[in-house]
Image (cartoon, rainbow, N blue to C red):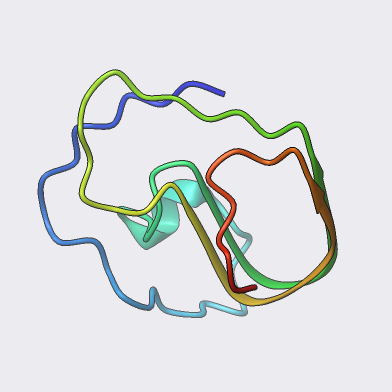
Length: 82
């Protein structure tokens, strides 16, 4: 997946939960990661993940919050500690 990147502002550390709303990416404002952000996920299975962006971005490429990974194989930028 390719992303525009170039976000220069501070990314939110922990976006609000908004449990009663239908999840739309734009409802949180800037996400805490420029490529993949997952929260409250069980059994995430990632294989062959490739992320790119043309510019710089202060946010990490991948952020996992309260996420239990089933498998991460050949996943670019994958966090060391999950």
